[in-house]
Length: 291
Length: 227
Ligand code: SF4
Ligand code: SF4
Image (cartoon, rainbow over all chains, first blue to last red):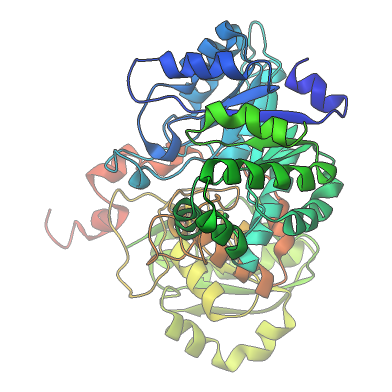
């Protein structure tokens, strides 16, 4: 069942993430696809994540299709203008890609090519608008297409914010994203079912399926690093201590993640597991969460 | 020197929708020499707005709206007229609108588009910046320029990168969209965050061919300088 049918029929969806590597060696991507294809509904393919240049998300999404894993083609606005973005969307459709996730994209300054020209000709909202126009058979300049796609478009949101302005801006922008055509939402990693529940209450009126983002902890150091450097990620101190005290860090990390998924499940329509290098552990997380 | 040109009148009346009264501010600096916000244009605007059924509570043309201290001293005797208006229509460049929006706690509408001069800039000290985009969006952003205040020049709202109010670029730079949010909130204009803004028209962000060679100001001065 496709991600779209699954979410539209109200079933709980599981997605995960596959990150292309730097270079042409696709062994790991193929292995991850083979391992995950019957365990998740779809896998996000990240687009030059953290502004680090690597194999593209379009080609990697194609590899997933060949391997039988449905991709969610991530698209940022950092590197391409509206001509390239729309053209890549058309290319994606003819390659069999059906899901697109629209993102603004981190600044080049944060990656391994800090001197690159930032584009941001469109942003996440106007990219969703462009996808909607293509689905309707037109480009955003109003020209008619010969043959049109029917993308299932999604967007992201940050659940936890450190200022009132940031929180309200996230919700306001989510409203704009849904109005511009986002049909599903994946969240930044959450660690507290409480604050996630509060967030879900606020966005319930948007009536859009939300997949709660989770990142399994690998160590206390990783948790502290994320708290300090990843906007919107707030790992509670008690979980950091649990990881620090754990003898078997892998088993504890998986267990914490699975427990969290159990608490999030009744609040939302799916879970998005961002394993960040732990792709091979995703099946154990799913199993431990009883999904 | 900054070059601005009037926005279409319908765009301005669109901004004023739902408002009954307005105070008009003009500028004796670049806006006057641009022919977009001097005493003549302010008087014309007053007539047109009254014709469109708006009450104009007062008008004032100040030397250099880009300087907040001059804005404040210029409006000193006019506090009642400003307070009686639902908003202020500011007939000048993007810097001037931002300076008035920062200096006066009223909703401020831009009446002009600031056009690209290909590098030339005004020289007042202040944090307001204008990229001369030729499609001024200040009405939607509380009078803070999204092109210059936001590192990515986002028009649809904040990205997810800010931490504690600072931009993902650096802890030394405020997140422009958080500033915009706080300003909209202070001016009771949060509904502005719901408006869909079209992608920027980059053809307007580029300098027109004649601007790359010279500026209108340079043309005006060319006789005296014997060029
Ligand atoms: S939106 Fe910003 S760049 Fe554009 S004219 Fe207004 S102040 Fe200038
Ligand atoms: S953090 Fe704020 S200022 Fe920086 S790019 Fe994002 S929205 Fe713009």
